[in-house]
Image 1: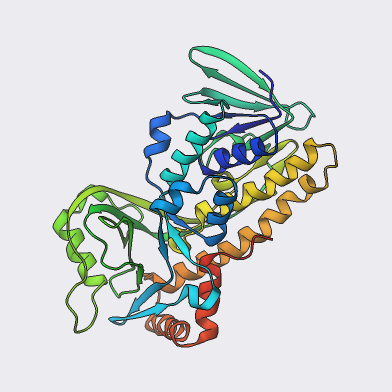
Image 2: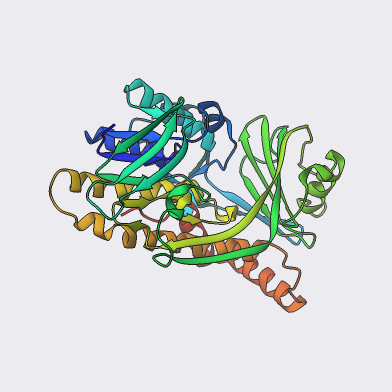
Length: 391
């Protein structure tokens, strides 16, 4: 097989890159280890920055997003039993949209198949070769046959545990990482959300987050131990803890209980590799960086990565020069580190650290109070949350 760009991974990064390159007239083949059903049904984050919505809309992928997405003009910070609304739209003129990552993936797969472009699901034994030559190659097994795909470039969009980053020789990448001493116990519940906007709560018992997937489906999170067994928590225990951490002084609970449809534990880490390139292999999305979910940046960073990468690839394939590809890693990393900083800050501000003393606890409360009562403080949170400028 032969293509211009071989893409490993059919998540948001790989599929959007393929779509943007197709619009530019560049041939791609997408390879995915999992089944189509798996990638369309796996539940992931679902908050889109304004810039992400704009990119998807400009690429012709916005119809269902605009019809079904839940637009939010603000968010609420809760601490000391009091709620404080941050007016995102009033401060920045931008908003965020709740639209599940799996829904974005469904839209991208539908668009690719409608274009008659190849996605090979359930491939096995995938490996990348000859990365430091002008003719890199991907080998894999599909439908019982060993195959090879010759490319001009390879995009490694296969996630944190994928094969692409691991294929780069030892010593060529610098890894920056922080593993946090807690995790999130998350549930999807058949219950209306407690608010029409997200609620981030700092509580002495630990962090809590109330968000949603639809007007009838709540997505709720509790800070827990990193080795927590989600199934060791009874439904009653989960709801009791959510009521406690989301409580407001002198007010009845806004939380509405319902059947818990899914539950799981999400580890918390910050991770970046530099550079995001080796020869003709380019890493994008979770293959190159992970952020703690507190700042809602994961999928948005993946979208920003491939937008820049698509432009660089187009310039290269049109025979102009290698300048944009050579600059791509540094360009992407400048945005990635700003998102890492914000995600680290939100995580540190809102979570309970077991080794923190009362002095640190008071500092966090003072900082939250400043953010909620200073326009400058609120503006800093708002402009990062809705997404920094893409250009």
